[in-house]
Length: 101
Image (cartoon, rainbow, N blue to C red):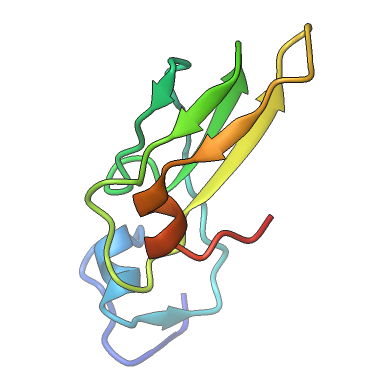
């Protein structure tokens, strides 16, 4: 893998490597986690960078915890078979994070 800057000791890049500004032309693969459907959905950004949530009712997304400045996180929101579900962001989440919808 070609790198600009410091080359990591392991062959696979970790979130820490990316946060440490290692630049690579290699494809980055993130494991997709499944968030637990509940009235207020919680999200740990340190272990669930890329995740999905199937809405089983109207839900509120809590602010992601354990995130780092500049971290890329992604959530795929899916309607269940009933549909017409809503997802709202709590006040902290709306103010602290730039959501691209």
